[in-house]
Length: 490
Image (cartoon, rainbow, N blue to C red):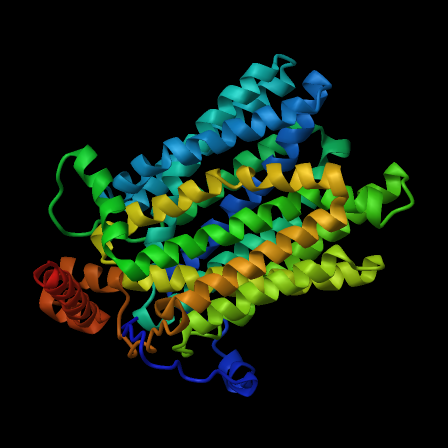
């Protein structure tokens, strides 16, 4: 996707009729026409089905083994710690190694870890420390897997399909949020936790098999490498030196900090706000509220899948973020359950529109050789999500869940208004619709490897030559402005 950043220009007006044009909706699943992406998407679904099922299984098993609610927190922390500590290493690995192989190795490791837990359960030898140790291991694998997974998407589709591909990827993840936890919980009673863990092992194995269908070519970016430490620092330096990327990364931190606490407080709303206090009714309502969040995310992803041609990405992000804040505020004061469900769905649509647009804007700006490291910084932000739970939880104990969520929504809206009000870069951020590229990067790489194309022809057919020239112009402009500022300084 070719980008032109023009903070001084007003973005092109986005009308409701343009966003809902029926002819645009025919492109919703266009990325799945690319065979490589279709295999990747299938593996993505299998992988996240297994992961989402394990969220339920892990919590059930931890409480069953200990009888203490704190054990759930311990297991969650064991998963989250590697996201902060290991993710930077995962980013360097994603930029140095073949991304296809990284996915195969990490998903195979997840499959083996799941198999080990299943065997221990079925043999009656499982202990809580086993669960914690395996959680640390799988959290580390996930922290290596996700930067490579995210950085791989732009390689699998032509440049003009990037936002569509990211939307479908995130939509698929939200679909698993709806199906997998319910499936995992329902299967525990008839089959037992051990055999359901076996099912997650099979799902991780299916994900591995799907990655073998990806071509080995075009999975390693070019460029020179320094030491491991230098390359790790290079990702952070790249973000710090690019003012627009800095703002986009900062904006990307907003949603997890405000969305995660809402998910964690859904049990409180289910039992204390929308139910009569009975455990049975509270559990049913919790399932409905959780499903509503997933449905909203899926619907938002489908809307975003048709937004490739809309250039005013800054405005799209603001619309999505503002919608999330407004409907989160409405959810906090919803008088009855049905309104709470509607507001959660609408909130999920806004959240997904923001996140997909933000992710697309970031990925479209990145050269392939740095993409994994930048994605790893985003991965670290997910490890920081629990930080947002503490103040909202304290406010809940002090003022009640409605007031706590209302305060959170208000802070989100103020933060969004300040960021977009004070930053012309975010307000006027544009990514002009990319020209129709004839090949995806991996398709071109295969033809180069077979001797059917030269590298120069491949760069032209994928649009990489055009994007590289644009990045060089932007870099030269930044250097020129920095030099001018220094020469004008007293």
